[in-house]
Image (cartoon, rainbow, N blue to C red; front, side):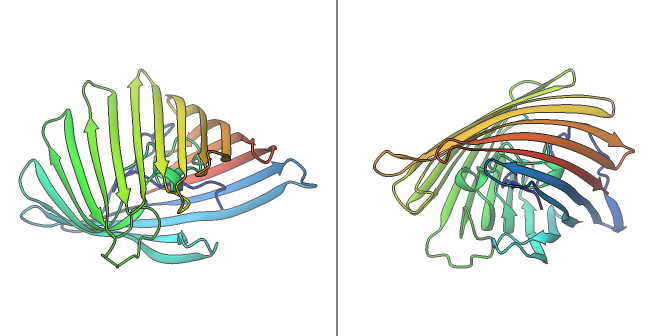
Amino acid sequence: MKYSTVRPTYFLTALLLTAPLCHAEIEIAEGISATGFIDMSFVSTDMDGAEDSDNEFSVDQVEVDITYQGAEGVSARIDIEFGENGTGNGEDETFIEQAFITKQIDKSFSVTAGRFLSYTGWETEEPTGLYQVSGTGYAPVFYGFYQQGVSGKYVFNKAISVTLSVVNDLFANPTESDTNNLGSEIGIHLNPVEGLTAKAFYLSETDRNSLNVWSSYEIKGFTFAAEYNIAEGTTGLDDESDGYLLMANYASGDYGITLRYHAYETEDPTGQTITDLSAITIAPSLKVGENLQLIAEFRMDSDDINDVDTNTFALEALFTF
């Protein structure tokens, strides 16, 4: 399975890949279409103090996304996934990842209800939206997750829009049905000039809150991105966390390469640092035909609290349809 997972960006088919793949919709019937992907990888991990490398090959995730476009601005989407179910038990299951209905009230305002993914975070939850094999691993600290509730989006113009979601559980449990402790997520989405995107989100739930800010710029085959996060109460105590990433990608024809640096740390209520992690990631990629992407990754992680360094090599095959 993947050695790091991420959480983020809302019913988004994908960001640009390192070398873009074909992700065309398959029409099933009038108004009903499907897309999906198969994601598999080989991962070799070498940790300080370990006698041998840990080597794994697995089918990480298979997903089919079904979209219905109805009349009078009503649409629906169901994402069916085979993979880890997010409960932490390490078992593969087939389950409903997303299921939501959207009503376009007018050309500016829409409302969505059901189970959907948080808007937050530069790095997407799905592998089809990543520029490398692994996510940073800090998403559970700073990003929202799959959520059950209601979300509204208002588009002022091509340059600015806002979103507001009220959900049962912001960060962890997509099946939560209890509405006694609701969480809220508000976001500002900016596209001031061609190629430049900037977004900011504030999430709040009981004693836990976080701020996620990121921006990206695309120009002549290059994509640059930067993200900064702060959070409080992630361990259930009065802790404070901050984290950031810097990423650069270059893609030309069938080839691409990504360089990323990220780091985050957490302090307990006494001010003592209890988590201090960082990593450098290098990931070249190759597009094989219109639907198959191969991505290799070398990642160097540092754990300064436990004084442990980990080197990881991964090779991913990602097929989209």
